Amino acid sequence: MAENNINLWAPWRMSYIKSLQPQDNSPSCFLCQYWATPELDAEHYVVYRSTQSLVVLNLFPYTGGHVLVAPSRHVPQLTQLSNEEHIELSCLITQTQMVLDRLLHPEGYNIGMNIGRVAGAGLPDHIHYHLVPRWSGDTNFMSNVGGVRVISNELRELHQQMSAAWSRSGSNS
Ligand SMILES: [Zn+2]
Image (cartoon, rainbow, N blue to C red):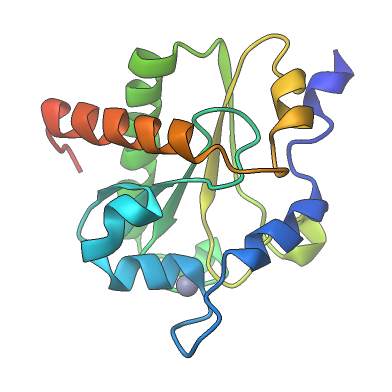
């Protein structure tokens, strides 16, 4: 069904992403801000951080379990990443999928990256992968919840479950 795919990379989400950015004189990029404040990981729904990458729940998810995987460096292009960073991001995407498989049992995933505003990137200067778990019929979730309001209790619960799953599985990245 084409309907299942129409909303996934919609540029209208830009306004929601922008609303996440801090207002004061802290860095204007929320991923950089998260990276710089490990003591606030729970508040920011950071599920895992390695030496150079972050795994964080998307505050305005398309579906439950929508996760962002990003390098710590503020770069807009894949070509600016080192091989080591590429490998770590790939490992983290795989590991995130394993955790989500165990916790949420999705029927499929969309995994991808928007490069540049023209492609729908809400934060074009700091690249990040999207992992979007998919279930048949999940367009109801997306139209009712995705980008419209934050279900903070659900995010908090998922954050706790994912963090716990991560520490149980140990780090392989
Ligand atoms: Zn950044």
